[in-house]
Image (cartoon, rainbow, N blue to C red):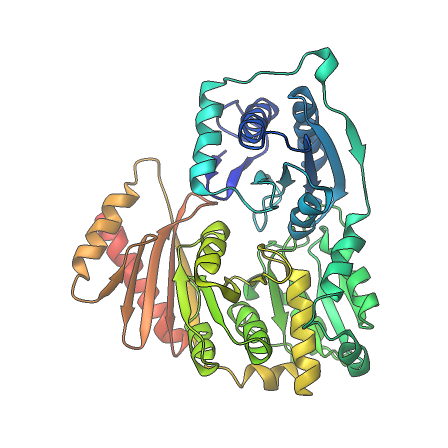
Length: 461
């Protein structure tokens, strides 16, 4: 059982003892600390906080505890029900709320859940703000409301359509071109909220679709991380015929987007952002940002369009912070996270789908043909499980010293850039592991580089 407190929120497994898991007592503590932070930093606000959740089995329980605690802290709660992470982010600004809590553990398996914390802009708290919340939770210095100042509770299920309306209104989303293209797609919604909102989006875009795992039961049909090894169901559906133009895969909270070519082969989760950026840059030249663990292909495409590319530390808030500093017109993360400031500063699979389909419609080609136009890199993703005694910082310092004669970036873990490849080691924000990502011109080379680094780390443990 595990409880992880990080830049990505408060995340843990359900059940177990207080202080060690995401259980009702700890949910109350962290929610109270967040409410105290919002009260302090949003004086004269609306006194409203939005709450949305994915379809996880534990979501109803966690939602009830969160909403009751917020009311006990004197905040009015707007519960938007089953909702994607980007929908919840947009709902904060649409309602003029002081903040929001998204109840989702993203790509983690079914036994996990999490509280993702938003400010009044519908954006994730910064690392500094998050640290204040954690400190407050440790001190338990909460002031709960008296009986006459308790918050009110309302439910509002209008935000799926309001989110879709905002996507369809984007200048670069060419609804007419998509409708004329007559696309047919297969969709893997992994038994979560994608199964609720994506049929509505696709219908309004005039796209025919077949849903796989569309019932939002929270009992995920497969590992919910949208990686090739977990997607045999939709890949086999594509290969079996059915005349699909594209396969669409989202994670449980619909902020990551993976695509599958008409052949049944992966478009490549790293290339979701590359393709969308190519389209955006062709219409609105500018700069781009992705994190250190993302493919070099975005850099290459950005340079081709005359823009500047910048790498940020891993973590959505780090990417958005760098995007604002670089005035980037598009950015995101190589895990299929598209951030388009014209919409909002958050990863949004709906925006990604609409922009990708616009690109495909304009190009008038097949998905596999579009993929072939981009630089070809391969990323191997390895991991090392951590034990309580593992000193990650010491290991990373040793790795940095071993490769001191190479180009090394230690903004987030250690990234070593070689002339034709790179490898990035960092402690995960969401799981008790060291992630080791490596990229090269072939998967064999990338995996060999990652395995070599794993052996180095194992020697140092």
